[in-house]
Image (cartoon, rainbow, N blue to C red; front, side):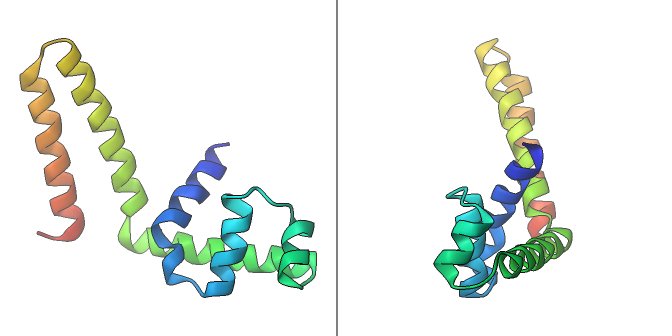
Length: 113
């Protein structure tokens, strides 16, 4: 399950940089939960061709994440936002503000500001 969520997040972030065919195959796999056979039929290629295309696309997504770290940054942001929300619910505005400031710093570091 964790791997599927990671693949979905990487697809959302980086699929636009892939070829249109790789995007279609990846979206069918990730978003539509199609089997290799279903994708093969839709694309007019073999199941092995689909499997190879998915492997290559996923490798490329991982290369982009290794270079840009956007999924990692988003995960950290999600954790900090949850912390801020809990702090606000508890009436701890100082901790909530610290979490928000940490998010700002996180993105500044990520984009090189």
